[in-house]
Image (cartoon, rainbow, N blue to C red):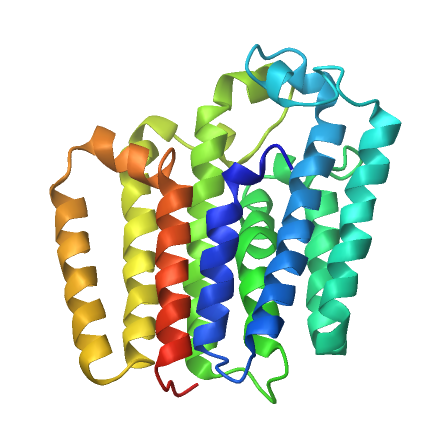
Length: 279
């Protein structure tokens, strides 16, 4: 829970996007889906801290962030709390049917295998990006889009592809950030097999252009004045982003990403609640 600031905004935005394509959901449904997805995301981060405790102890910053390294929890206590978040999260998804529960279960499985040392998907080049794109983005969105829905709209399926791309870019950025530590601990991921010096300047664009695709899908599901207002806002923000210096772009998609995502998600939820949308 102490690391929830690293992903709360993404969870809000993903739930809001799913709601856009699934307007039949009530406010109570949205609250349950948000809490369920938040707890499953907490598990992915928590089990990563459990499995990486030995490696994190070698990094001056991570040794403080990881509660096991910081001696706030024993490894056994951390495991119990991690799996408790899974049980409660899946219980919150249970009322929405087997399909949503299956998506949540796959999310848990990928989040576990991503960090579990005997498998460690995050140490497999390219597989690391795909698995991260699924369990930290795509599957949260799909649990909301599928909840109480007879089928998934084609536009929602395209949105899932955009979301997966954004999450994959985020994972690659983290790998570049942790490049030296990962090399010392023997993790061989996508960043280790690519020329990261050439790729890093391109990463902001791997965030912004799929985001523009998501924004375009949002516009298609709005109408009238709301579409005009949101469209102008997206156009202005995209132009501003393109004109910003690279350092500022990097801060927006890293340090400032969560509160920006939370703000965008909350605004979208308000629009979805007060306007009539077509899935």
